[in-house]
Image 1 (tube, rainbow, N blue to C red):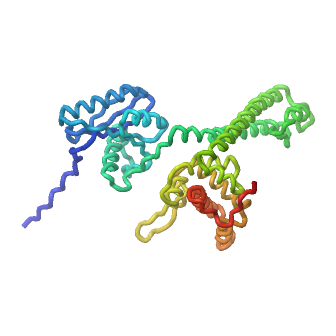
Image 2 (cartoon, one colour):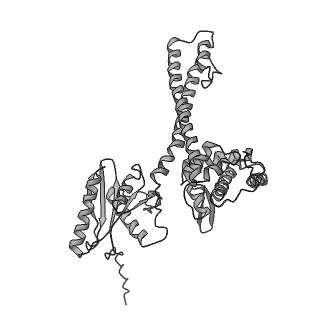
Image 3 (cartoon, rainbow, N blue to C red):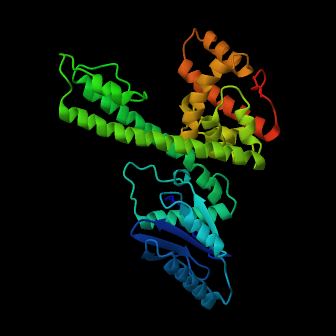
Length: 387
């Protein structure tokens, strides 16, 4: 007898017995795409758009969704919104929370996507994917996506000092290198634009063949020095605000003072560690390492099992600072257990893999600092500054 193959079952449908109106926002500068799934509306998701930045139009659309759901089911339903973390920041989320609307901000890299070589991507497809991720998240399905912990306006504003200083110092480096490059083309080396007598030295400079510096070149370097001096003043002002912030913060939380008490950690490192990472609550050491992007990334499939290095999926500013701090920790804390661990591991590898091991040291150091500021667990062998 011929064998009849079983017919493929239809794909699972969306449960329409919803207890809320689920909405996703696809944000751009010109248009906000609103994708919603409402009770009594079947499996089809409705899509509407408002002009970018039109928060009143967005709230009006939410009221219309509530009214339509009320007319279909004779019940009132709350609205649950999801949006991706991006250039728009968190102000939309804060407006929705102030209006009594449940809002979530998701890390877009944590949402599963098709692994096809050429996958379709449109705002419509992304909006529907966000709604499905929100539904799964509210059903408490594990590892569906990673929701972002939205900082308070004060926490968000506190980060700006260290980030502005980093931008200013990078710009300072560019001006210094530009001046040195212009002089090197005239055979001049050894000029340091950051010295206080930079302008007097500029007047005394001679080219490699003994000539006075050309008029227009000297004028251009003079204008570069004007911008450089302005940057130096701004850096000094930012550092003053940073020191005031650290002094005032010690009243509310002991973390900055505890960090400053460790030898090898100065005001800038303490500010970055506190404002970028240690202000948050972590449940365990794995979350600490993952937030800094220092967690290992395994690759296991059958007999294949190897490490791909750190994920780099966390805070890049915090990760760069921790690696710098790890190198300085070896110099300023030679008697600590972390330094001994690093030296023993490098010695076991014949003096190789220092760059790899310094990343591992940065991860251990950040976990140790987290335990120190939250539970008071002092790092073994660490030197505390004297008053």
